[in-house]
Length: 513
Ligand code: SF4
Picture 1 (cartoon, rainbow, N blue to C red):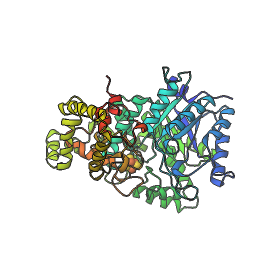
Picture 2: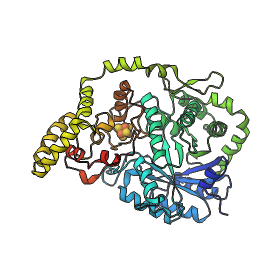
Picture 3: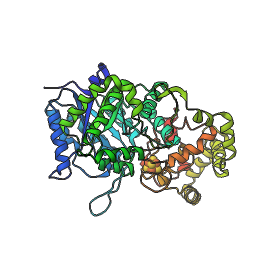
Picture 4: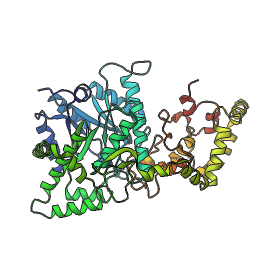
């Protein structure tokens, strides 16, 4: 039996689809967890309710076998699949050849993610690549595999490109930036969306509402992770980047798990409630994860059918965000979800008066950077034109090397510059993403920050800091209104100033001549 494709179901029907997730085996002899996951995948092939099986790519930064092997097996049995593709382990060329390989092997659906930072490796930690980020990967798949044209392959049917978003963020900066980055991914070519997991229907509502109000029209599958006590503890302790279980939900989990079934009925019911809520809210499907045997998938879907009429009540019940979580929209007391009006506290923080007050408190260093940018580095400014002429002479007289040394003498102590030659300081509120972000994210934050702290290092996420710098100037909502930034590695260890003024960096590539 060959099932309809995910693309067909999402693009050409109104069907509510179910996707299940499988984690490939680790090593040559799969452990018990992987075996259970693989057996479930094989058993679900015959279940007509399962639209696709989604195969992770070294999730959590742990090494697993290549998802393509399992994808081919499932495709051979008539089961559509989603293959996750992470930027962590491959350069852009490696990603492109993988994209072509997937297309040739009949894989039609990919999920483009930056990927969790590696946590292990052979005789020491593996070196992450992050040559491009998830936005760059979406653009690459869209531009070089799907599009016709000088660079694109453009042979039908191409890839159906999925992208992730993390709405379950506690801070305003993290949440809003996730939504802005989602917009950038969609403009770059994302076809469908899978949010990170979480247990708050109001956050789901916020995501769908934001997408509707910002005209981001793409099918969204609600991520429903079936918990266990161990996993809930890991999520609560922030051991898996971006996965959130609040203290209050963990307390409920602990009570349920103390019962004779170790909480199994509770966990399956919670998942079924989430599926029913997702369907009622207008998600296009449910993405079931959590190493589920086929019998549990069946149980969740059967319970969800029974819960369907009660979804509005369940949506009030399943609201487990951590205390103090930011919401963009005013709560509707009638539904417990959002309204189209902004949350009053958030709305007050973006009034002209509030922004003016915050501007007065902006750091003199940031103000100086803005001044210098406006007068020297902004294309069209008198300073930019003069610098362009000066650098033209500098290069003609072969003085570029000493000037580069001078530039580095300033930029290393001031910005911790890494001499990439394709500078993104103006993109990230004059913070260097090469040195301040372990993934070098130039197109908004990854999904791994927790309460504003970086997924990898014990310091504030560079994008949260950028948001806080931009907000007093009313620029935080437009920071990603631009094409994806993709670094040109040919410019490494060359003068970023020369490259800016002589039109060789990404700013020039973005500006139509
Ligand atoms: S600085 Fe922010 S975007 Fe970069 S890795 Fe850390 S959490 Fe992710």
